[in-house]
Structure formats: structure tokens, C-alpha cells
Image 1: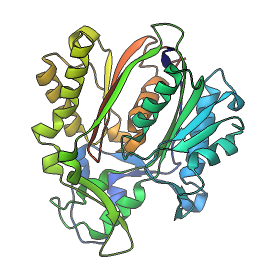
Image 2: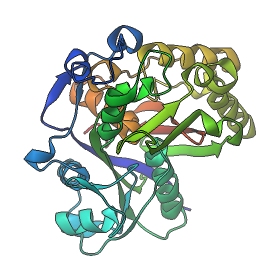
Image 3: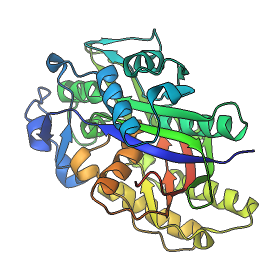
Length: 346
């Protein structure tokens, strides 16, 4: 079987940046929230639909950026997997045609098949998991995961309905928009490859974060039991999954010698708690964390690779770095991925 690697990475952000205070100024519910103090989020990007920004336009920009950083043309892609939570075409949420097909058409990937994967904030890692398996099995040679997250409409619901910091809609005030595109192809050596990727769903925690239409308005809302979400049993799940996976591989977290770790960018305090849980379960010191929640907020399924893109753009990820990715998502989805990156850095 052929190993796979992360071959190139692209991203696209809405052009308009907002401070947390600017977002909260639009609260019509009468609620009072100290979002920046609690989460560390200072700024974020949110789409401007009047300027033509939507799921497909951001996904197209990210895909083209990814191709420009790779050795491939659009016609070289065998498959495109779209992994965003929802698809907005202008002001409308749509289900057909598949976003993957439309993005392929827009960028000229005429030879690519494709489909959409929806797995909440774990969508990107789910798509990489599937694509990595296809490459190892020899089904495809080169593919791209495009995750265009337009989740700020859920923030609009919280601005209209959330009443106080204990409100289950409070975490919706952390959401923002962004798109990433990850090209995955065949690995050429051990210094540039995906070592493993695994995911699980823990049904015990599934009621903790649910998105649905509001019963009180026409908004889409997200209800999150934040206290239970951040409690030790749930926080430790990723590390226990990783520990068991490494034991089967005859290794340990310390022996893996990760250079960096990327958690879901929910908030500064929460990522610190995830790291503490990792240290406890693995009985090892955690590597430096890639953290961008303060400037991009929680961008859902795009968050891990937006953080990596940001650090690479600033020259802070050396070639050959070994990175641990830790996705967590509604459902509840937990996962781990280990990858050494070289071509990705450029």
C-alpha cells in the first residue's frame, strides 16, 4: 500500500474583520456577555453576502490557493471532498448539487469525481481519513479536501436569543467563517507523510452540542452544554483514544516526539484544559500548541488547518515538523492524526 502525505495547503478568509465588541453590539436579546475575557477571542472574519461571499466562493478561493502552492494543476485531481458543515449559495442553504462538484467545476478540475462529507467540526479530519485510505488502497493518486465553513449565521441566532452567560447559546457567540483546502497525494518518503489518522464517535456525549432551527425565530441556533463539554471525562477522551492507538503501534506519546499539537480552536482556556488532559493521560509533556482562536475565533471544521496555514505563512513551522492534530466535534466526534510535513511548508 502507498502512504499518503499532506501535499499542499490553501485558505481563504472573508474580507471583513470584526472585533468581538463589534459583534456583540448587534445583540438584540438584551444579554450581557464577556466573550473576549472568557474565550480570548479578539477578532474574527464573517462573510458579507452582499459582496458575494458564501460557501462556494470561499471554497473556490481556498482550492485555487492550495493548487497555487502545489505542483499540480486542477486537471490532475482525481477527487474533491467537500467537508463543511453547511453549504450556503448566497443567502440560501442548499443540499444539491454537491458542493464538491460545484467547486470542481469552478476551478477546472474536470477529471475529478467528488462528494460531500458532513461530520460537524470533525468534517475535515473525516474527509482526510477517507482520502488517505483511498490513496493507501491505490484507488486514487491525488485528491483535495475543501472545507468552507460559513457558520456565522448561528451567531446571528445567539445575538437574537441568548440571555446570559449560562445560556446554552453562549458558545455560538464564538463562531466565525473561513475556508481551507488540503491537497493529499502519495508520500515519497518518511519525512513527508501521514503516519496515522483515527476517529471515534462517543454517543454518551452526543446531546452536549446540537444545532437546529430555533423554536422562537427563523434563526439557526446551536445549543451547547459547555460545563459538561469541558468536564474531565469528555476532555480526556481524545487522549485515551490516542494512548490506546499508540499502544497498539508499540509506541507512546513521548516516543512520537511531536514538534507541535493543534487542538480545536474553541477558546484559549479550553485548549489549555485539553493539553492538561493530554499530559495526564499520556504522562508526558505536551508540545507547543498552535493557537489562532484569538484572531480567527472558532471556524468549525476548518479550524485546525487554518491555524497551521497561519503559522506556516509566518514561517513558524520548519520543514520536517511532526504535528499532532486533535479534532473534537458535536456528535461527539474525537480523533487524532499524526503527520510529518515537508512539501506543505514549501
